[in-house]
Length: 343
Figure 1 (cartoon, rainbow, N blue to C red):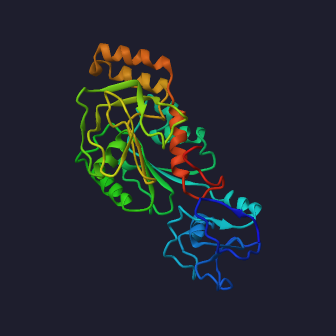
Figure 2: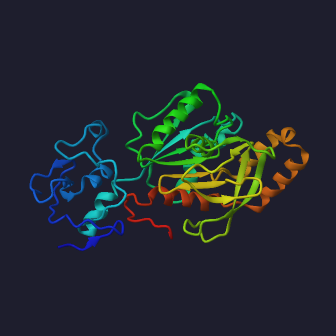
Figure 3: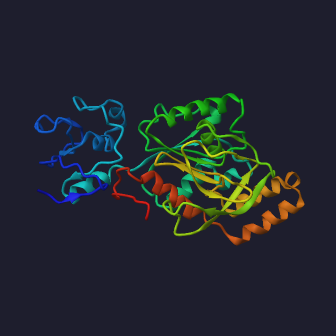
């Protein structure tokens, strides 16, 4: 019997034998009559949950499910463990990166596009710097009506910021709200930044509207409230913000993680399903400075100067991006094994 390789604290002792073959296709596990829900991936007997996580077949074949493999729980695999040789485990999961869908909800001004590309590009860059090195990350432009054929193949969907209002009646925003409402009823994790944070909250039943104090910009410091959901052991976190709308009431069933006097609901989460943040972990000082200069007249000289001066104090966008990476990986099977709250 091989040593047990733990993925979570809830083991499932059902793998009783294994064989390594040169087989890149899924097969029905007829020999595993002792457990009819076992499947074979690369010659290893595993749960179908694990098979779903390890679908590394060619793209043309990936759309077709494996023949004769039970499909009831194939897209849900947050709490399983499997006994197999560690070397075999690592070999399989090195070929099975996390899959993240980024819904890019705005366009960067032409002047900044050569430097920053898009909001999706900026978000991907900070997540990779925070540990998502080998992830498959696909970006779709929602204002252009771009969406994946299915969200089911993704471990998480991330919504970027936008200059649009999350409560807008613009057709593309209405369509996005419809899509997010569907995702909230699924098993795909949701992450929201700024506009995305607001739109997800709105779909969850929260009130969203103009911030009573007007625009919030530059470096902002937020108090961290939930010690069970730590961010690098801090009691506060500094991030770059740029918004005139915000979440006004906490979404039902969610937990407040961070707040400030100007932004009472800055970060919230709902169990292991939703994580949303009002400021921008993907922003850097150069881009924030550009936005501040662009909105100088709108902000007024006092807010503009204090916001510009705040940029020199630095921010912790990378640290928050690490929190996002850990949240997406938590209770999800990856090459790196388990991710827990103390990572």
